[in-house]
Structures are given as structure tokens and as C-alpha cells.
Length: 141
Length: 141
DNA sequence: GTCTATAATAGTAATAGTTATCGTTATTGA
DNA sequence: TCAATAACGATAACTATTACTATTATAGAC
Image (tube, rainbow over all chains, first blue to last red; front, side, top):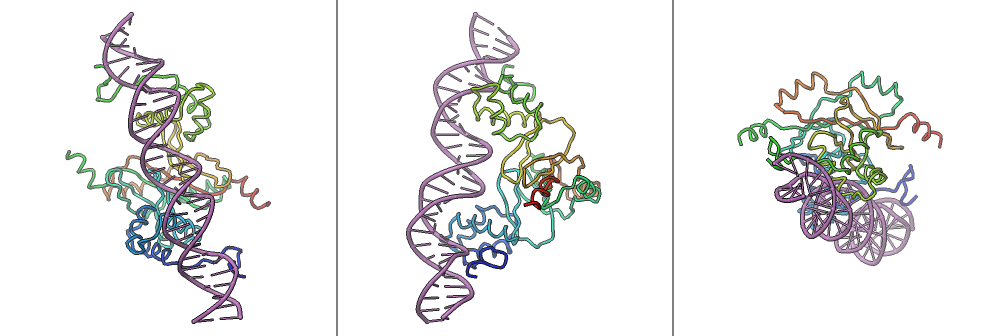
């Protein structure tokens, strides 16, 4: 049973590069883009390649260890899974992404989904606008 | 006042290409990607270029005439504005995008936003999963 | 510890979606 | 009809991501 686990998938190995990526995501102010992860990871593993970062982000989200969200700027961003489920508040000026703990999956929504017979895998909710600081910065100019 | 309107922006002209794009979006089953719009538009304006499509989609969404949404597959999709506000139900198997009329911006959410002093410009809510048909297709294989 | 299968890597090329450039064309108000 | 310039087509460039390939490193078996 070399290279295969019970469900027919390959067995994961633990490389220094993968560990560095996981450490970063675990420690970081989350919502990192692939490029950001790459730049940070280079400080720990100088020879790491961007391809390796993408490959690992893919593998790790398949495995359910991290969560990928895609935003309006066309970039995907990643964060550690297992943290409490949440959504995003994104400032259009400074780009800050804040967590929104309120989940909009209200009971009446569930009812509609059941009626439509739609089997939910994942949902995403983002609010775009201007944060407190940027509102003042904008009006001040 | 040539080329400028009251708010300092350029005055829009009405080209056959732009009209074709608007006609398509007005008539279509909505949520079209740039590429889809391009392919359809070529049937009406054979010489239209993909660049022109993108340029118009940009201009028209700046103008507020159409709405751009970005999805998990990395592609932006466009639909006519002015229709009732709605969100999306996206099938991961067949890619069908259905409208969800329920808006998750519940009153208690508004309260949180006010507390955070976050000025909302736009919000996006998407539910990914499997539609009725694809659930049966999947279990049957 | 050594061996071996292969997961994972670095480096690089390729792709997809989108934006920018530039010389030409066409729209629109005067 | 004319002039200013918005919009165009063609094409190059750019960004995010994926694929390819030869090489390296991990981890279980011996």
C-alpha cells in the first residue's frame, strides 16, 4: 500500500516548504494571497518557488486544512481552516479585510434551499465598502 | 463643453459595438462572462474585438448600467443593472447560476456595520453546491 | 542505518483572464 | 460639413494560476 491511503488518495508527506506555509497561515493575520505567502515563506525557505506555494495551497485546501476564498480583485486568498466560520468586510480604499462573525445563512434561507433541493457545499459572503479610517481620510481630502 | 459633462467625466457615445453588448445583456439569461459576451457579440458585429468588450464592460459598470460579480472560478460575470437586487446559487457540477432573491443583509447585520462604522458600497453573497439535477446525476454514477 | 518508491521540489514554460498601448475610425455637437 | 475626441481593432503586456520535467527528499520497509 505504498503511496496510497485507505481512500485511494496519495499519502501526504511533510516537507519543510509545506510546513513553512502552514506555519505562516497559522500565525498570520490571515487572508493571505499566494504572492504574500510566497514572499513571507522565502524568509524561512529562501529557495521555495511560487509553484510550490500554489501546489501546496491546492493540496492543503483539497485536504480541508486551509480555506480558499476568491475576492473581487481576482486574487484568491487563503486562511487556516478550523477557525470559527466567518465572512468578510473588505475596505475598497486600504484593502483591509476584516472578519464578520455574523453568518447570513438565516433559517428562512435554508428553507428556500431545501425547497430548491440545492445541496450546499460552501457559501461566501462579502461586504465591500469603506472602513472607519478611510471614510475620514476620503472626506478630509 | 466638448467631451465633458457636468461632473467632469467624458461624455459617452453610442457605438454599434456597445449597443450590441447592451442588447445581449438585456436579452440574455444573464451572468455572462466577457468571453461569452464576445462570442455572442461577434454574431452581430463580426469585427468586434475582445478588447472592446472588456473596455465597454468596464465603462458600463462604472456608469452603473451593468453589474459585475466575481466568482470562485476566477472569472467575472456581468448582468444588466436595475433588475431586482439578488444573489447567486451556483452549481459546482454544471456551472448553472441561479438567482436567489433572498438578501442576507439582515437588520442585525446592519447594526454591526453601523457599530463598526463601515460604509457599505456593495455586497456579494454566493452559495456553492449541487443543484437538484446534478445531485441525482452524481449519485447515479 | 540503508534502500526504494514516489511525493514534493525548483525552475521554467504555458495558459487564462484582463488591461494597456497605439494608430485609425466613427460619433456627435457646433 | 467640420473638428474634437470617444471608441475602435489589433496586438502586446501583465497578473494570477496551472502544467511540465528533471531532480531531490521524505518515510515506510528491510
